[in-house]
Length: 428
Image (tube, rainbow, N blue to C red; front, side, top):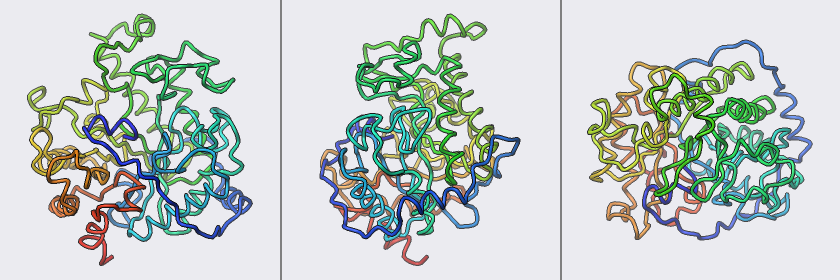
């Protein structure tokens, strides 16, 4: 969903630096700590999911933006800023979301097996200070929760389960990093490092690391993107031979075993979240194509080169139909009329998937494509995304949109976000 999405959707993203507006800080770290403490830190006791219709039912459709921290895509604008500068940029994004009449921010708090809060499991993120493990001097997630709620915004904590690093050199990780302590957990692939999803101890560890944030902070949702097993890289093999030999017995093939591993991660997290904190929703934002109809009669009328079921070993349709999620946000990053993956065909398909399941459907929107000269002609029209929202309004299952990403929402270089607000959000 984050850096990798540019290649998957055949796009280029502008590298324009985001100049954060100067804002006065309205809270101190002590206030954040006090507010978080008031929210309580419930222990992991028996509980139930917070209702299949999703906890946002009372406030209408979701209007969200992703705020990416990996590689300093959105926030912070660069590593090494002072704590005050980082806070100011974060507050500016939250205020920008309010100005755009949004009601939710999906904040990436675990971009690469690291943390944007004081985690006992993983080191501080390198994207904060430029040095992995170095304390930035404040609590970004704690501040984000308090300040988002103060502005009437939901704060969805966005985690990447398995990515360890955007390079393959384990020695670059901070000493004591779990991937260095357990090198057998790690698989290099496609120029990156990943935890091996086939190992039960890995599956438990990454869940524990993510749930620590849920236990500490009153986040509104746990949010995952589209990375499970990594996207295929031509000429490379994801080396999980040893794990498959040990745990793959009883499965007809490796693909079935890998899908089982991903299913277990999703199901177990679905069960554990409400035991840690009631009312926290669980949502996933998958790549927009589950399977093409030419592969499976249940699939969409598309001709996509990537199919999540076959290539990422992620049965995204199955998770919805089994009720393991509270919401799903398929990344429908194509224009209306795009031949291989038409927005106007994929949205009705996803509406059919969620129908009668109680799982809410929100649509992932490619705001970052607007005005990009490398994109097809429809993306040169600032009204393309507004047409997406108009089209979605004809489907009762479509309950809102999430825009990628924060930089484009706030700076809006092509005017597409302003058009969305004027056409769809001004009267509420």
